[in-house]
Image (cartoon, rainbow, N blue to C red):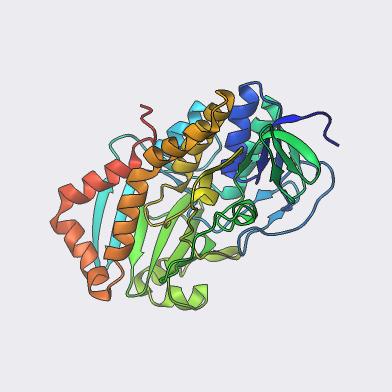
Length: 373
């Protein structure tokens, strides 16, 4: 078991937690990541505790942790990953295409391609990098969090700081009393892979009356389809409301089961509570509509570790606000703006008509978070 006091304990072994651990270990901090889901460790350090933090999320031994997500890294997120020296295989995509009512509108990235990467592949690459940097990954949950002026104690283990990167429904955030009431219009996501060659060089967003579907190429013979919406129903039922997309998938075999996550919108009263810092979805999440989740998580992880190294965790709060401002404003506006059915029907024609605005918005989303070139 752990010997001595940790510099940093990270709750959650998804991408946000692993990138936090990678930055911390490279900064010389004695770091552990605690993650209860199967697949968190390579070989199961300290045993394994099966569990789920978000609905429909699990993993397999040595297979990495899977999650219901779009799996597309925008150019900015990919650049951040490569700066870390992590370069997992995947499939390139060169922009965003909106599809609906027999029409489409394209916006090609100016900053270079993004990359579709299976979440399990990304997890394994980040896990290996964090371990190689000196972080230790332990298969256990973070429980019984207490803190004082000098540190944090979790399950009897002492650390100088704790980063909670434990997902949308963060147990640490809840235990600290930082949860805020949920949205009156909750949205949920379902994802499934199909064994079919990508037919487009873009991530395609197929807009329907009540749902939208994000099609991401993740391999030469595989696409991921994530369906988002506020209505109830199975993945197949939602797909049937998008007949053009369903026809494109007719020749493809489903690869694996359906995974779900939500409600997507989650809030936190603040991102710093004493010596505890919230990173990634645990810090607050608006929606997956703009695809900025991983880019934000990577930038927040770096900012949180910088604040810990400098001995000033409180500075992370204004840093978080600055890093996420664009995402919060734009994503909230798009979610509200596309809620009326009339607006959803008009979205693709408007994107064609206002092509410069559409392309400019996509380029803004593709830029790195936090000012990196």
